[in-house]
Length: 366
Ligand code: ASP
Ligand code: MG
Image (spheres, helix red, strand yellow):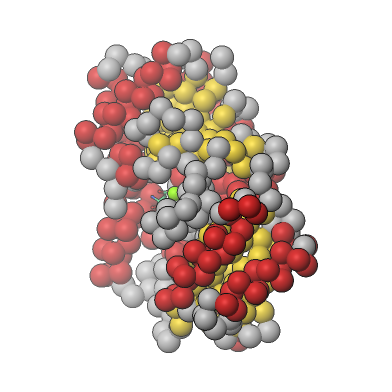
């Protein structure tokens, strides 16, 4: 049997009790005959707490020092998980991003992976050990510690899965898969058994939180099969692969972490934070900004995800029609191959998510 990469999110390793459950799950995967690479996030809310400390010291902390600070969170998890596995009698060895050969560009706090040289991870597997890798971080060619943007542990898992030719890359968290909408907002939302990598990518770009964008982009480019599953369940979750999704429209996704800026702000913001640009302005992803931009308006987007929906005039017309009927002022919209996105005021987002999901994913159109 081949290599399995398993990534555990912050809530799965939030305290030592949960960390031991993860250790047992990893041990069971190894006992089933797999070579296991585990990628861990920082424990619970650690990354936010570290960022809050930085903001107490400086309103605009330098991005290099931010990386030195927040990369620590994942290192705590990796060492503790290795110890927990050793307690179970399972040989395990932890590695930082740099030791795992995750080479990135120089863009601190939102670095892109440019190369993966997992020699030490491979050697650990060859020695019969479980390799535990600190997620979310790498090293630049200038030997600086970099981090991969919020949610970046998913990216660590996928790039290692690609480099090690893993059978599957499992993203384990407190949710048991990818849903057709947020179940807390849309009562009729359902879990998807399968979906295509192309649509998962459109979904991540639209602000979906289950799988990080850069991670899905790598998986899509390299053909890595992903599985989103719950840490505390034996259910298979959602399998994400090159095969087409079973339904015309897969999901409706809302992003509430956005800011709206005039076009003239473009030189002042990191390009990676620009979600969309139109003649009326810029939509910025506030998650990786890490800087104070005064007087910017919070905005939300609601996106319909499905194969080639952005190139289908009938679907586009239906999206605009449903949107105009929710009573929410339609401010702006744009489309990509597999998504159509509507910009709304944050307060109107949930109603629009329910309306679009009702129209496209419930009843006969589903
Ligand atoms: N700990 C980092 C974050 O909170 C990375 C991750 O969890 O994937 O964004
Ligand atoms: Mg995540």
